[in-house]
Length: 281
Image (tube, rainbow, N blue to C red; front, side, top):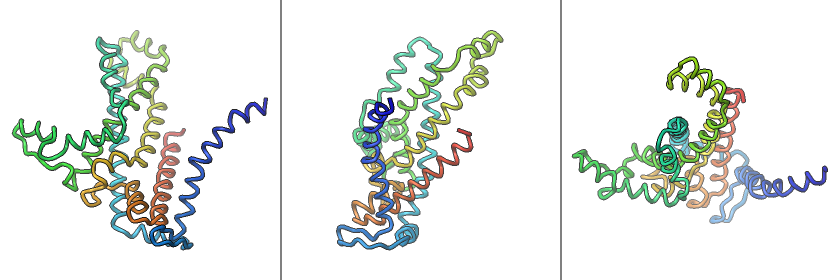
């Protein structure tokens, strides 16, 4: 019996070790080295990379953008998905069509979504500016304004993430016990009161886990930002994941990029620990 258990678990352990544990270990190891294949150096420098990278404007901008990006993408995305799940939970006429349309973006790939939204927000011929112009509202080069760019990309990311969050929350709603809901209906509770006092408290553990997973995922999101803006204009929309990519694959500073990646992992880990303790998971 024990040997059968080992046979089942061993492939997963090997896969996780090769594709997750080893790259993570290597990232932390490289963060202590001045490692650049372009300069052909690999010298141990201890914590120097961490001190050096945290003093740069690129890193500070990445931290600020990440602080904006994670709550916006995770919070607003979870809220929209929850609203959609609650709407379809009532099983109104046409709810199946609504569910199909709501989950449609899940079949798309991030690169295609990024290109589509970049074209929609392009100036002057994008769909967004075309609609604004038809309404006689001032148009803007949305992806070229530093103060707007991170929010514009967040809209595309949320649109892409919501279908999966919606499916998870819908599954959570379908798994709720029926007895409390039936009791509320017998007591004559309205739909709003039933949702607020019965459904949401029952759904809270699932909702908390969904928000945690979405937040962790938001920390590492890269594709949408890179495809739409490459962290620009300048570095205005660069989160820490984009900053790490720039250091490693544009400046060829693997040590510096690894230090940023390690910091990002530690921030996400700290957030997860604090959040789980707060919600008592």
